[in-house]
Length: 451
Ligand code: FAD
Image (cartoon, rainbow, N blue to C red; front, side):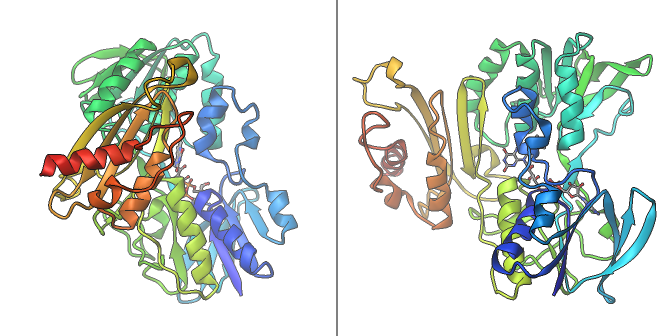
């Protein structure tokens, strides 16, 4: 059997890895249109802050290493079209500008996404950057030490925008963070958390221009010099656009069923609308555990799970993509937070009735001094007030307690209720936590509120 895999990031890598793990003698052709395979944007902040020194190490696989495992790796070669009836793809070799057709038995697409550009005048000015992939990582790194760059404007205060703002704040720049929504990280955290984080961002020389809409990038001598919003104008030597992504699927529109955002429609086995063609990663939706509906959640974790499941199905297994909850975590200066599932702020958009309980505690018993790591922890649990089903949670502390959110993710997936969580068995040791884990405390409080 010959399998062609398109795209070398999380989804593509995991597909190839999954096939190799089970049937290493499968003929695999793996295509990447860039000149580097398996760069992990997730590691970009660590590289930009100098924690990881070599940009080329921010990856899981090398072409050489994968070729040694028998994979036919094609770098700088773009798959430009598919003929599903003939079971062939057209490949454009970007080095010598030739094209050829390649037959496949099974085809897995992990074409991913590219950063969305804000449709306003001035987007083509120099120093308007994005933050995704190795090329942008290298360009951004140069700007962290460029003395001509003093004012950095980041557009989009989601995860990636927060990472960019933190990088440039730590590099000593004055950062403006613009977002259309009234709070940073508004889709990930409710206000109890973002109020604290907003203060932290301000303390680190990051100006929050939230609730503002970008109207224009103003230029001088071909370079960006300011960003104009509906409310103000911000001097800008560098602009980083992190306001969403666009599926990399324009080339598929005449071949596969796509939705109105260009996402490839897949069934629960990750099969597309054409036989023997699978799609995974950021250019697809995933089943969302809290609602049972499909949702676009662009995370490496999802791409990895889908890649592994696509590999299983390609090899003849019968495996469904499990529902996920969009669990994610991030550090913002001294704080570490994580969230999963529904928040108060995303409840309406997801069409669910929800109620939440917010609790504050210390990570350890009161007799443990702060110097021993005892920190305040904030936790919010969201649930269905009628069925008591757990729908989501958020946690934040200066101590890293983010792993609790993985337990909530499992509770959502397992359709657990407040009643299950209130007395669930979690360990206690004063060096780590309290006799009642904060998840128990919140669920008990929620049951009392409902009484
Ligand atoms: P992509 O990563 O978009 O890769 C697609 C690849 O396919 C690209 O290399 C592209 O060049 C190639 N390609 C596309 N079309 C073709 C074609 N026709 N022919 C050949 N090659 C093609 N997620 C997390 O879970 N945790 C994190 O901490 C995290 N941090 C992130 C930080 C940043 C700065 C960014 C930008 C993203 C982060 N993500 C994180 C999200 C994660 O990176 C994405 O969800 C993941 O990369 C999606 O993988 P993918 O395989 O769908 O596609």
